[in-house]
Image (cartoon, rainbow, N blue to C red; front, side, top):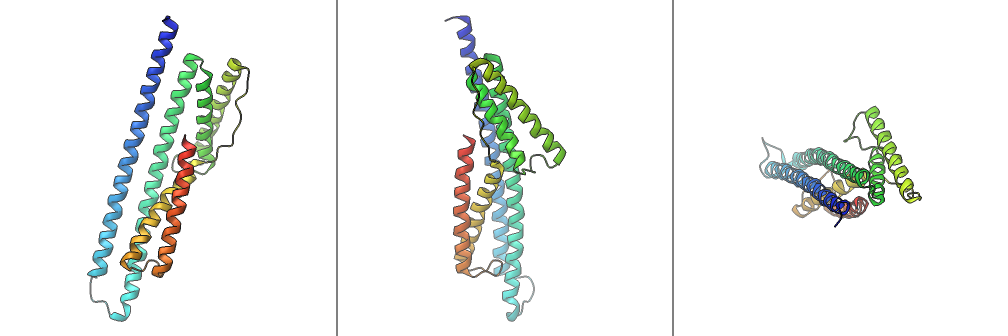
Length: 238
């Protein structure tokens, strides 16, 4: 085996090792986020059930339905805030993963001249830019910083395109990358919204003045929308 092939083989081993590390880190972060989310939602549900069965202070019978409705509204608001924070955390974790993965592809391409990885780098840079176009404020809340980062990613993509063309004599096809941050957000909110509403229907609780039938229908609808959005989000990552 020549030294060039040996070096290329070792570089590919290092590439796989680095990619495995960042993927493991993402999985660990997402697991921690989901665990925290689940625990916080369980606490809110426990508090709701406790207050519905053992309300504080005397509540007249004619005001009990209104009292329960207010409790459920407050529960819904609390869950919405918890879900929103979890969604932001998930968006940031996935953005950091894609950013690191793309940098690894780009470094490997520049070190080896492998056009396959220049193409992977272009795809990653353009996806990162598209996430900012989709209004993913959880990553860069400041508009100027968001615009600066997006332009940097597009510039990096063009440089990688140039390297690819110099090596192969061909252009990398241009694709319109839809912002995956929005699809990830819809997936999380849809699935969690369905999980919240369906148990409420089974226990007979009224949420936001909706009948059990309407709550069940809304819960199933949100859950299905979440699954579909999750499918397209996951497909877009690969």
